[in-house]
Image 1 (cartoon, rainbow, N blue to C red):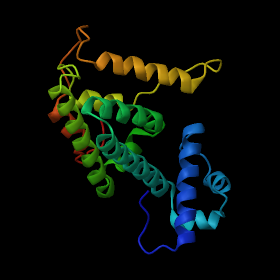
Image 2: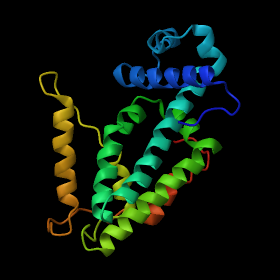
Image 3: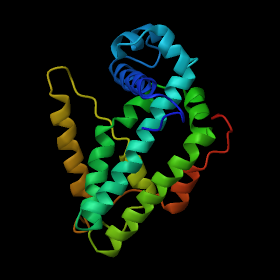
Image 4: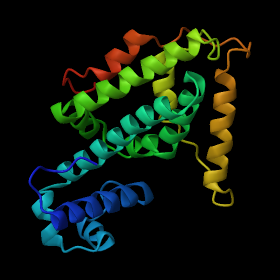
Length: 216
């Protein structure tokens, strides 16, 4: 996780605890959870939280940055450690879904989501993730493992997969099953026709490059 330069070790630790606690609570409840509750979950005082994050938007931005950096690390690690692009892509998508990015995005007000997306500090990370998705997609298709009618924009959408599960269903198990069904459908030997056209590299770039215009 990226931290502010010059922070002492204890200050860095407190910041990391706050961001981790905020992410947990945003997923469990909502992004409007009281910041006092975030401080309690992190085991720090409210004053410590506000010294690091003067308002809710600053904390949301930190949670978003942490998620994006974890995505970038996932892509880099998968590409380095897996034997080929297909296995790297599968590992990356499993990890991306486990981050529950779709849940976080769904809980944000659209205008707030847009403000967070246009921040210069997040744009570079987003572009790095997009480049990794494009690279893995192209290599997996060149190897003949990924079906040709899939674009990198399609992969970007799958990264935010979110499955509603009733209380009686084990959420993690259900999600794991859905991810494997999803990955099986991406294989080159699957012949079921897909509606519409692939979301290509241009679609991925349009999603990554935000001009700051609020959504209509």
